[in-house]
Length: 339
Image 1 (tube, rainbow, N blue to C red):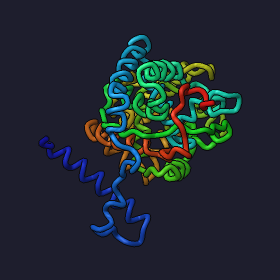
Image 2 (cartoon, rainbow, N blue to C red; image 1 turned 135 degrees about the vertical axis):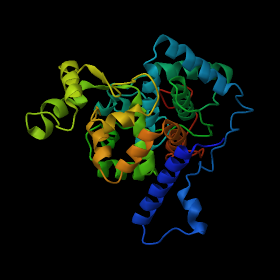
Image 3 (cartoon, rainbow, N blue to C red; image 1 turned 120 degrees about the horizontal axis):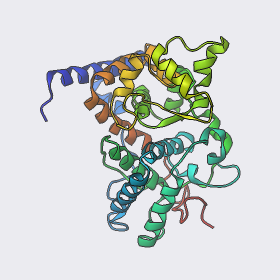
């Protein structure tokens, strides 16, 4: 592939910013022998050929089911991506978000609005029919997120498999997951606690290019910003008028990307620049000096956003995985631990 001069410039800008981040976090400039420390790697226990023999049609089955479900309801695609993110954000990518009991993660207030559980159940049922007790729910979630991304025009990336399903799911552990109003320092520290970096934060926030938020997540911002009785002055006036009309009730929904809500593109970043961010956290990424250069880079290059999104989703899918037989299991039903 031959890159245009503008693409090369953008790539160099991103690499330069990464170097600045690394230098700021250390008194020593990284040496060539240290470069591997700055390159994310897939977990040693995961590999692409994991199901080649035991369940060779696994990816085909999942893709077919995603095609089937999104044909009936296109809004499921962003919901499935979010479901994977919420799973990885608590105990790592272990399928704990799927466990269904009175005190599990999916019962927490932060999980309100999560959708797609029936899609996972449908996929799991078919996989159990063709490959009994073989494919983990955690691997299903990671693959579903990839295929849902592709379905809405996002990038494709190769998957590595071998995750086990966890035994534990606690609603109270969801309280640490960012919900749209935290400051950038909190977001950075949260992502770092999961082994992710600032680039992953900004890129994965770009998933807001599709999907919706409940209006109660933004009502303080548009009606009572910082207890002033007024709206956040950073919101573009025309967009603020729209949000006030749309979100009279907290139970309503609003698109996270007001310009191309059903297309996976970099308009999310352009909207932020134009004062049309829906969530307060999205606006915070623009005004914080640590993240604003990355917002500008991805606003300029849809190609670069697509490429880096694939990388960051691989990084997300490698978060705190379980691979040992004593760490997890292959659930027969994703909603319950095996008996």
